Image 1: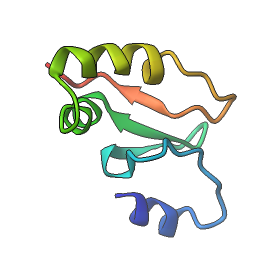
Image 2: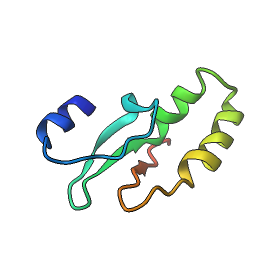
Image 3: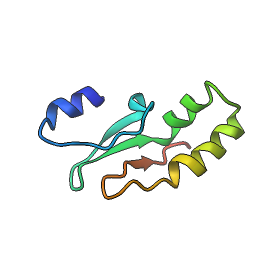
Image 4: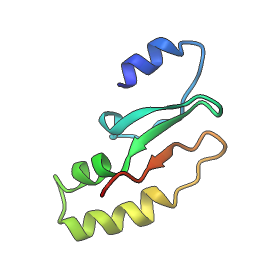
Length: 79
């Protein structure tokens, strides 16, 4: 998905979360911010930690992180 976005929006720069390129599900065109899937991020974290630890890590280190106006968007799709 990231390659397609970068190809389509070749003149834009995006703020990415390191190690989670495969968790990108789209781009918000008004603000030109990447959209990440909460479900995919948690699945990736659970590859190296227990589910509860992954959820805690996500909550404190990813969901609450503000990196300026280009901060990626988290889609809460983990139903």
